Image (tube, rainbow, N blue to C red):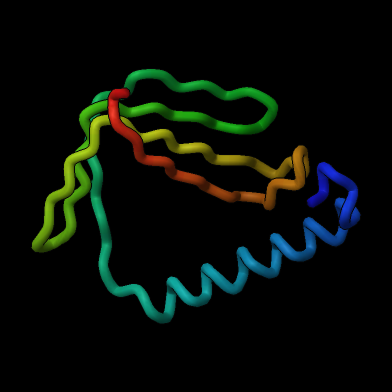
Length: 98
């Protein structure tokens, strides 16, 4: 929406900051499980205050479950408002080798 000038960058940042607070509060109050993951680091990059990690053959472990994924991409933004990203946001995408 910010890119197409439907809302101002300041409003987009306020919305994302509020979402960040709300989701962190919900996770802290409602989620009791932890997940550990392990994989082979394929690539990593730090550009424009954004970290990107790509891992292959990743295993996610919870107390009773194990999930295996071919490829995981983790994107961690810093304190930049480039492209209207919220501060300290992290996105994880899962995919296959295709």
